[in-house]
Length: 228
Length: 228
Image (cartoon, rainbow over the protein chains, first blue to last red):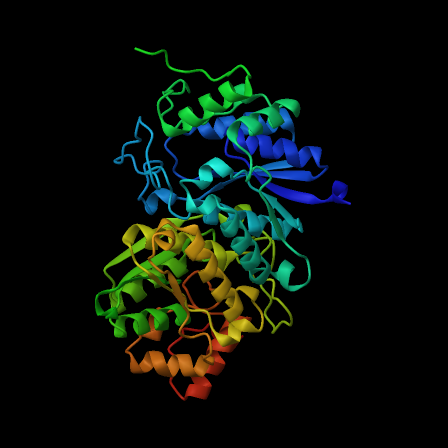
């Protein structure tokens, strides 16, 4: 049944969303990839998103500009806030206020125009610990709101937000993606990429990614800046 | 208590949001006005938003660019779809998919950065009939989602979305705003403004606005294109 269904898939250029796209493809969805130019630190992420979609395939790939740097409040969109190079506790400074809500909202608009009843987002159980908008109860509340927000929902097309990684650990995600043929060498996770796109190896995102490959016993294709 | 509270107020340059800002000001909120450059047909709306905020006052006025024309599907953001010049039934073609959800999401992000627990939006009972994202059940679902989405909500700051016009008729809104000193001559409602900012007098938005002033028995300051 799902084999003919359209789905909007959020693709950031990171490891999780690449795996999510591969899962949606394998499930037979006609995938419409969506990426955001949101004032993030590293425009390199957009190149990675493009490469990931080229490798895995999609019916279309749309980029939407939304200037979240106008809001500020995060190390990822405000150049004055430094990205920590050591593990943090609590909600990290790399949290971008309402980012997933903004992204899912724009995905919802596109899904409605496409008559696509499904949106895929690659949030996962590890993000859970730090970012409020990666928790299952948040995804469910968004889905409920989405069905009241739209013409589609109102007219009987039930919108679903699927987060297939939400209960997986990073190593499980990597194993899953490897089995589905994801080229993780194309993806970037680091919050502190250098100008050539090499990962710092020190930030939270690098730490999680490194540990994921180690636990999965899969070679890490990430290009890291050599240790001083 | 509310006298010291911050609130983010969505200001479109229209009649409803101007009235909403006046209501929030009168209730004693420190208002942070937020407007969107979202690829709308008429950039004149942004000038109107600026004029409204200048007249009524706000602590700050932020503009956020978000390219909803990339999504399409609406006569308001897609130049290929014509705005009807006669009343429509059902959900009109001027409905912008997920627009209020996108706007409220960005307002939520800014509110979180400002530690403002309140967001004002000027949706009302008349919109109710056509746009799904103007209904009370939608606003409540958004509010519930918002409290799960944010660091603020998670840490105990309860976010509220207030829609003080939601149960008012257009004439009541105009009477309320007149009492609060809103200069409706600064506001624009028309979907088909001409290049000098004059209203067509024919579209749904003009029809509702005209009827509102007539029922309220208040002079309509709108500049209409003279009838042919």
